[in-house]
Image 1 (cartoon, rainbow, N blue to C red):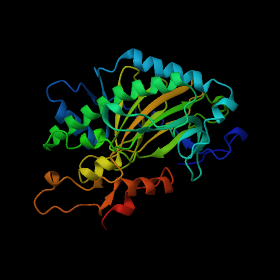
Image 2: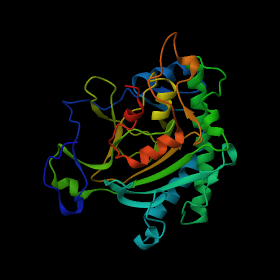
Image 3: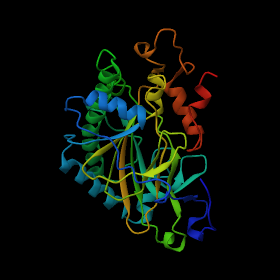
Length: 337
């Protein structure tokens, strides 16, 4: 991240970025679009995860009404008086947060609600420890996550098929397990009019660059631009991702990278604030049980191939992630040198 100018007072402690310019990189219009029911979907998913760590699912089967209901509830919550929102926080790590992301000083132009889930499979619901402002929002979240969890499960099953891993649920069973660690985040990035006082080449951090620790993340936004990914090339170029209200974006997490011994790669991504339009995004994080051993699947290790990572559990990794900054390479301490 490069600070380009003195910050207006309201942006104090929030990093400024050099935004990708037309001469630097085009928008990522080549985001692979996958219909999981189509012939060849398994190989397309694996190819996308190897090349980009990122793709979008179309014809996903998640009812539009379920998505619209949660988005409306989220907009209503974030439009409520600040004291009402503060009553659901501070996020530690669950609950309502405003600008401060996590415990280690990361800041962004956003507010959010972070929720955990009790139970696995179809029985999972918002954990009692997660502060939710209303029963209507809780119901909308439960309905939405039930649908998107099914999508994440299908993605992992298709990925296993494409990798040649048996049984087909070798990966997805980690998400449907009763002890699976599932988290859901709703982010609200208000319009940032202060951007209009900054150079065109300068952006404001909405959510700083990071990889997701879990197996996969499933993201949907309201159609406002801001998401950027770092391409898996020598330059690690940042490119904007065109929004698509009708699709779900799937992001490879660190855990899936470990399970495939680096074949499928987690992708660094970030969100840049928008000067005119608010952005609302909803992200489901599919994680395994805390006791799940994170090691490459034996079927994916070639003859004589050694694991790139030392032995650890998801619980170990999650604790380490919470101790780190967003931009840290969280996997590096677990890599065999």
